[in-house]
Image (cartoon, rainbow, N blue to C red; front, side):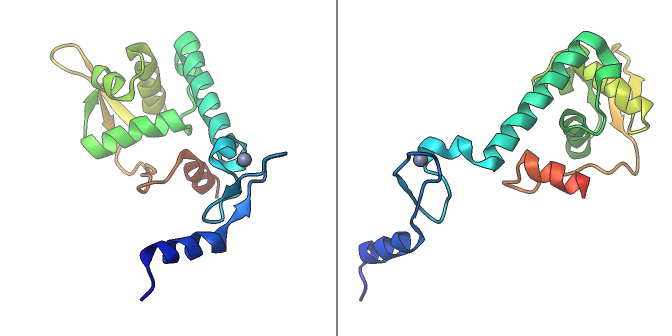
Length: 157
Ligand SMILES: [Zn+2]
């Protein structure tokens, strides 16, 4: 009978490679190209970070310039549509809370999406703006564990 420890040792040895970072001598497990210290050098991680910076910049622009700075095909717009698809109609205030964005930013996104026919806006009796997903709108629903990168790749394909 093979002891579990031996099995683990042989399994990890088989996949061991050296970290691709310059001057790094660490070995990595499971065939990963970078060790934990250098995982940020992985092209996937770099691309993901660039996308997050881009998303952050867009949100800053929307905060300053309003509706015209909204990319209705972008990550944040899709996140808003996803909220509506998953949870149904939402007020701008509720979306702002759930998406951790300013109310004015979410309202700009909602207005841009309404302009593009992806959502409709209505005023509630309490005076809040309620956002409803337009019928037939395709919303990208990320699979469990799927990152933003796959989102973009799938969108562009
Ligand atoms: Zn390394």
